Amino acid sequence: MTTVTPSRTVLERFPAGGPRGSWPAEAYAAAQRAQGTDARVVMDLGSDQFLVVTDTTTH
Image 1 (cartoon, rainbow, N blue to C red):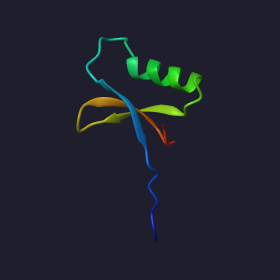
Image 2 (tube, one colour):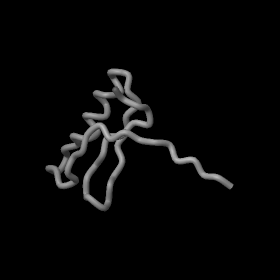
Image 3 (cartoon, one colour):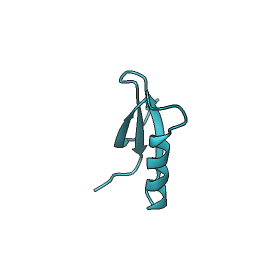
Image 4 (cartoon, one colour):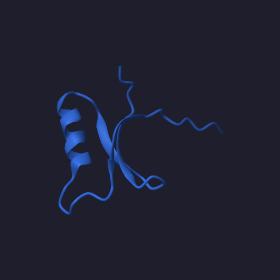
């Protein structure tokens, strides 16, 4: 059985220790979606950062 892992492009990185109530990664992802990029936020536990990623290739 072969497992295929989709490639992801990291659009931006945000530190996890932002001010309470501040969601800069979510705001950035929403702005990217408004421009037509399928962006979402994931947590990178190793670096303690929120990553805004897309499964599509950006130019």
